[in-house]
Image 1 (cartoon, helix red, strand yellow):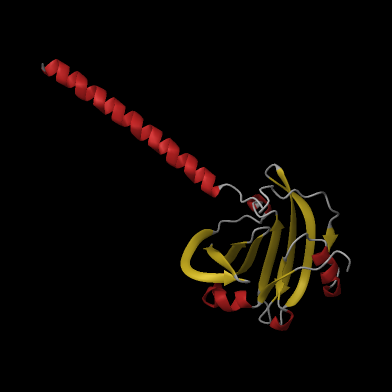
Image 2 (image 1 turned 180 degrees about the vertical axis):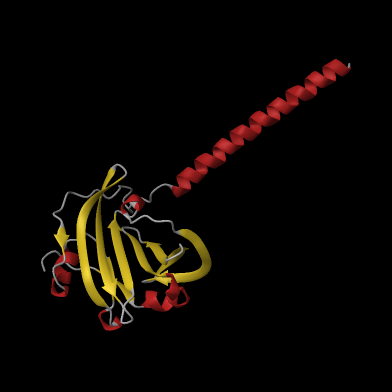
Length: 196
């Protein structure tokens, strides 16, 4: 009788482990579905065609650079008092997708450097500059009206936000972290038609 009971309990343990393994696979699959790249409203992914690279030669060429980006681009508010130093827009490979990356580098009145990045399509995380940034703060911050994540490393902090079409990153010196929302309020998303 004990042998049958042990065999029965062993069988129950195996069934329970199998059930847990199946449940874990279902949860993992659901996580991948939730975290998968967002599609556009039509259910189709944004597909870019190759575009020529554009390098900013002076601040007056900013409208042409912005027109070369097929979406709203992150830039400083003209009244912020920041000096535009350089910028570019170019096609980059992001995984198996062609993405358009635009970057603007500004200098603040105190001499600090700020790097603003915009990339489309919105699931092109690989196209953004990499670093050792880690999620640090749960304090809510918005970036041009979009909910933003705050990541930090030993020298910088960055705000990441995503719209339905683009992904944005604003990088600042870590010493300015207490003013994250004020700095973010000096940024805007701007769209300029390619006819400029």
